[in-house]
Amino acid sequence: MDRRKFLKSTALTAASVASLGITPANGKKRTVTEKVNTRLDVKGRIIEPSRSIPVVDGADVVVVGGGPARFAASIAAAREGCDVLLLERGYFIGGLFTGCDVTLLNNMYSPTPDGRVQAVFGLCDELCRRLDSHKMLAWAGTPPNVDTEATKYFMERMCVEAGVRILYGVQAAQVSMSGDRIDAVIMETKSGRVAVNAKFVIDCSGDGDILEWCAEDYYEYKYDISSMWRVGNVGNVRFGSATPNEGVRTGHLGDGVKDVDGLDIYVLTRAQIELREQMWQQVQELRQKPESGGAYLVSSPSVVGVRTTRVLNSVFNVTVGGAAEGVSYPDVIGFTGSDSTIEWKGEKIPGVKRKIWQVPYRSLVPRRVNNLLVAGRCFGFEQGLRYDAREVGTCIMTGEAAGAAAANALANRCSVRDVDVTVLQATLRSHGVKLDW
Image (cartoon, rainbow, N blue to C red; front, side, top):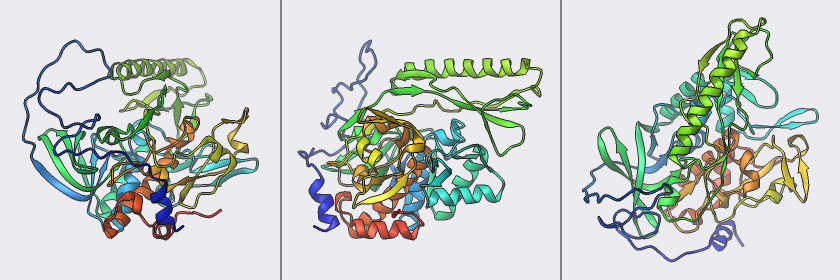
């Protein structure tokens, strides 16, 4: 069986949802009297009049979100000749990586008894080389530690240089579908509620927003919400991790607010307030230490540190066993590091004893929608991998593969499930991605 047939045969099909116009998660066409569901306590209902939404743009590939996966997906597709439109609600590239001061580029490397070994290459490696050339990269153990402001700059420059068109300040709000294809992404913006047409969409929203609106199957994984932040003038106090900037260190609140729903706006608000208070108090404690140089808060996160929410139930979800045992997949699109402890067969395996693990293309592929791919922390994986699967290195790797796959599907006018994996792998290798170990 060739790899194209292999992918197609593993896809589970569902009944087509025939619809023109806006299609919410229940798969039915929305009318003005339809009740929109929410996880929040409902105090009443209002009826919103129907609206004619202007289409203001369109692209071969529309990438939703601006985090590490979106950065990589956009560049990978653009470098293959696609017209790419990146939609980001904030005003910078990097998502939690840069906006939440997550300066550690985790899972690009794996710890070993002798040090570390690189697992993620391609665009992740290219970004690090740029940062290093400007002395904006430091080592604080296994992963490299970056300067977040420099990372915002270079991520944006790399997108612009690749020809990616960026739209900041836009919040994806819904999709319009015809059958099993997305026609357009609808957005709330300062210019009003508008839409952009799309031939292919890559959901890099982190929370799997697009896949829910498309009525794709998914899991919800609760996890801790935490924060990292930067402190200056720490002096000789042992605190956090080194950064490329002299006298500035990165702090981490660890578990933060434990095991909560990262899709609940009340929970997110409470978490942000609690975490900011914890950061402030820790800095004040540092200031009181005689060996401190007069510590001060350099930056606090501009976004809440949500770790995991919706995760795609993909054509094939990466298993804990597959990661623990280093399973090889015929449709591999990259490796990722293993710097966390996982449980397998009743044993806790620390990162230093784990194998670098593969991610197959099938884990980015939905079961029904024909022109949607999912990358970043919402691609398909078992809950036991929620630490590794959401890390920056893994997000960049899956994003790069999704962008290259969308370009392949566009060129061949085929469904994402019919992408020729052999050609996709050749493209990724040409980008410097390592697929053999």
